[in-house]
Amino acid sequence: MADVSDQIFGGLKQAGQSGLPLYLQLRKSIEDAVKTGLIGPGDALPSERDIATKADISRVTVRKAVQDLVKGGLLVQRHGSGTFVAPRVERVEQSLSRLTSFTEDMARRGMAVRSAWLDRGVFTPSPEEIMALGLSSKELVSRIARLRIADDTPLAIERASLSSSILPDPSAIEFSLYATLGKTGNRPVRAVQRISAANLNETDARLLAVQPGVAGLHIERISYLASGKVVEFTRSIYRGDAYDFVAELRLSGPGEETGDRS
Image (cartoon, rainbow, N blue to C red):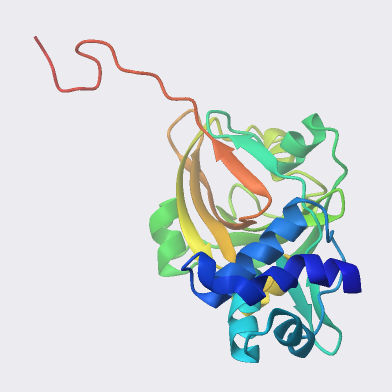
């Protein structure tokens, strides 16, 4: 690691040339080292003290640069072990134009899919669930919560709520929720999704094997039957470093969705 350390950190001794703050220069040096393969997934970084000595900068500056990269997901810190280059995660693209289950989508990519159950059962609905699912105050709600895993990489935490009249026994789900609903004619045919940025809390980050506070995607989905009845209310958290959502957009023609009625 000594020769590699010289290549990564030695140039910062002439750091005044770029005009950037030192911690940004150090951060860029580490990013470039990962991109060019000088250090790879699982490799350990030198200690803060060693980096500070090699780069001739303060440990506070080193700590700030490293923490930025940890929050960005490039580095991971393991208590008592040190700082390491994060494992490389193969990014997954998901189309927003098709309504598919996670199981079906990953299977089409040839990825080995499995789920870890976090919770499932029948409960009294929350006010949010009553509103989203159109339930009466006397109805019950079935909840399922799963960690979705593809090729041994945890990708998403999925928390779904359905009327107990549609899913009376959550334990009946084996692999795919939509496959289970399809058996009773309750598979949704359309959905509305809202996607927003989120910083992962400690619990969700631990499940997704990332650092707390890193960027993730929060997705809220309400799915409908052909009749227009709401069948599913799902809130999911996806890893921001592993998932890309892709939508095809078309330019409207004259008079289409523009308010032009002439």
